[in-house]
Image (cartoon, rainbow, N blue to C red):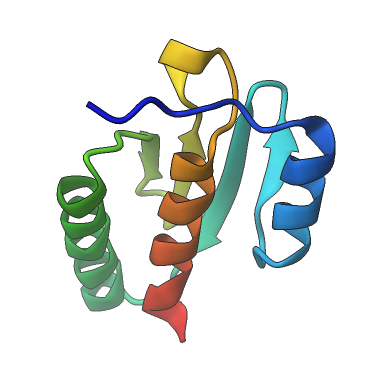
Length: 98
């Protein structure tokens, strides 16, 4: 199993410059996605599931049906912080909206 290495604060900040909508929150990076259309929400949830399976990296997901928002937070618990795996997961989630 490949060991993931915690990124420095500088590495995280640099990566966030290229990750639209993502921000640092303590030991995580997170993004709240606002999606008006229910069919698009369904497709995005499928995309999240696909990315999680492909990357074997498991973010926290909060789905607020009343506001039609999905909040994703990711960290690498085994390393106590943010790793490249978290950055890669965020990039793949953002691809849905391109």
